[in-house]
Length: 205
Ligand SMILES: N[C@@H](CCC(=O)N[C@@H](CS)C(=O)NCC(=O)O)C(=O)O
Image (cartoon, rainbow, N blue to C red; front, side):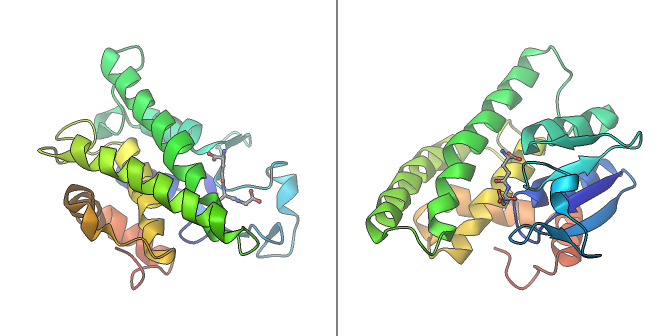
């Protein structure tokens, strides 16, 4: 498999999942701004949406959309417990988390990375994220990971997007449970490997 990624982007979650699952894969660094791969070829030829992550499967197909990729990876290695069995109520709880992270956290960050965004939009966005983090902080109280004691793909995804707080001036000290969660995930050996491979170790939470 080949993972098309950009350092520190949402593709980091898929990268972490691949390492946690112990699957063989190759990293393909992608310039998402200019839509080019390192050899100068056109990234739109890989993903016509122009976004990472994209995962080229062993049969040559390309799978896109982080939550779909994450589940594909987890389902290749059920023993890794990165996702509960499909069809179980626990799996739907995981989907609940993946959907929350993708729609309420991931995309909410976008204006903070846009230099052209109006300061009022950035302020609204920051306050909105604060509210989501207030709720997340309560959800994480007394739990090691989002669904309990077991690390799942939802944790890889939440860690990845909350880590962006470090780059947009949001101080996580206000949310001690969330901050401790970030530290717990960052300390995992496979997460360290992924951060290192993306050149992010010094910038990580
Ligand atoms: N809906 C997609 C969104 C992916 C996404 O937003 N990727 C960002 C990086 S975090 C990206 O590649 N942005 C460049 C672009 O869309 O032009 C998913 O969940 O995978």
